Length: 151
Image 1 (cartoon, rainbow, N blue to C red):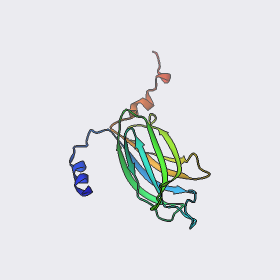
Image 2: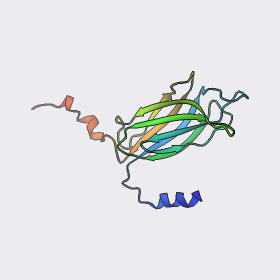
Image 3: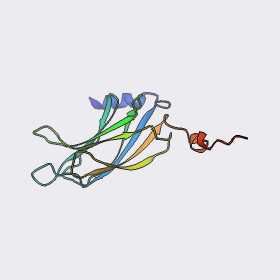
Image 4: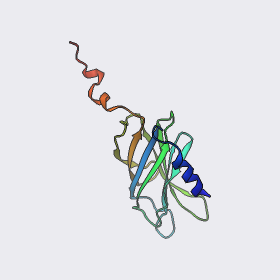
């Protein structure tokens, strides 16, 4: 079952693997998808061909997930974010989407951001992104070529 798979993933040496750590903190003002006036939102993060899904927050338009997720870093620098309403009977309804450019991330420097969801009336999610073994180095912040001094 899935438990064996998870153990296999942990057993892999991940010290030098490039990965994007995502803390999905919470959502606010998400749209109503269900007749009872609620939604059962979850978030899917996609980077290249890999994607991960969060837990489902049942009957909640202002969910607090506080969930840590991780994606292997490929050559792709655009993180795709899709929010869905879990629907047991029909297809899961879309609750908005967004894209985040990862080229601005500094290595091992967590960045907190509020993401406004597109294609919906309202809704945003708060995430923290951290570039592990990729991204700009801290030195680049200090010695930007624009501020180079010619002696």
